[in-house]
Length: 448
Length: 126
Image (cartoon, rainbow over all chains, first blue to last red; front, side, top):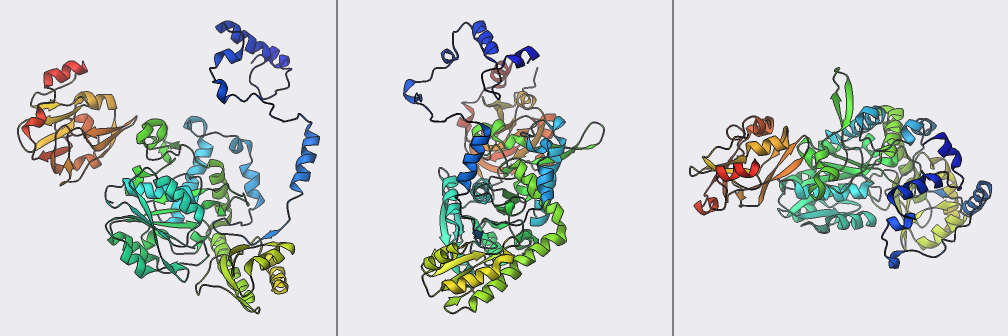
């Protein structure tokens, strides 16, 4: 654009790429009178009404948004169930918000994106190290889409002849829904296996897994916070049935719980955003790792290390022939993107913690949950944890009094907890809300 | 000019099948390997699997594309060229000899009737 063009921009649209003069020149060149003539949009799908957006100044807009946000209750959250908040150190904000990272688009051109590609390679390497599986992609949308992709991977792998995906009875309903959506249109079906006292019922699973089974899915920790102790058996059951074993977990749990590869996991999925993201109310980061033999069945982006002409280590998106922009309808997956910036933040947070810091944080998740359960269990008419298991971050509570009423009283006192059913609550404790457990126990005692 | 030996017949989708009786060797033509460019990976069925004429039996991946492989004949896979898993470049270097993909048994002579002769195929790829 010329300087003259820049000065002509007077139509109040600073983000529009063309000035009115430029637009007029282009219309003139192609011989039409208006931009509308360039498009053939049927009248029935055109929106002719007023959008109802009034122009206003930045200051007025900020004031309006602030007062809207101020209507939110300021609650201390003890909510979990697949979304976990840990303290994100400011170094993550500071580094990830550098313009080179924040404004970067998909790393298609390795010659100009070495920095981000290296960061994503580091993210993949961290996930590979934590899971013990050699191949990690540079992220999915979230754990649920990762699970859907794991099922479809099992459907593609030639060594698997079954078509049934076995998922645990205790599973976040959103994950089940996303999985159903992913297998729709394939040969795959979804069936449920029972749990006993909050963890996998190994005997029942053993009876259900057969040659019709394509994938056995289990979680550690479960959505109720229980820690599985029989995962090697689950892996062996899947193996014996000729099926794959997919394990759902998260980046913090991986710092302490059994290494997925060592219990026979073929695919690991989960929320990687337990680290790197503050509470985001929806945005996630799906980790996805698998064995090398399934490398060409991996969905999504992979960053690989290579050497340039001068023998220097370089990075590039690799094995793109699996992907939709090359392989069209035969692609391994319809995912054409990744959560690059979130993955970057997770990698930064992991690197900041280091192996010891991660183990300390994970240990705290077990310790705080046990301590809080113990104190609540001491209250009259309250039993915690409901399941006689070890717990990670969260656990369920049985209450003699109606759970919803207790949750309502706690909310009035500034605490948010999850209502499971008429007499069960679930709470989640991490480094972020651990300092408020005294106050929560006090409020709980008053509420019952 | 591409090599098109006449001891085999060809399919429109560029796979060949040898005509000297069982086992029938299956692979891709010289023209096809040249179009694909450097082959980096080949996915094949296992010995004992059935293949059906016109149906996909595997995948060949080059640096620029992934293509499905379609069986030129029906039958039972007697042997798979394991060498291709470590040296997929054999498909480029020697498509008709060391770069073969499958040996298929139990092939019906009628399967060859719909295939192109070497002459017909080379006219098509000129």
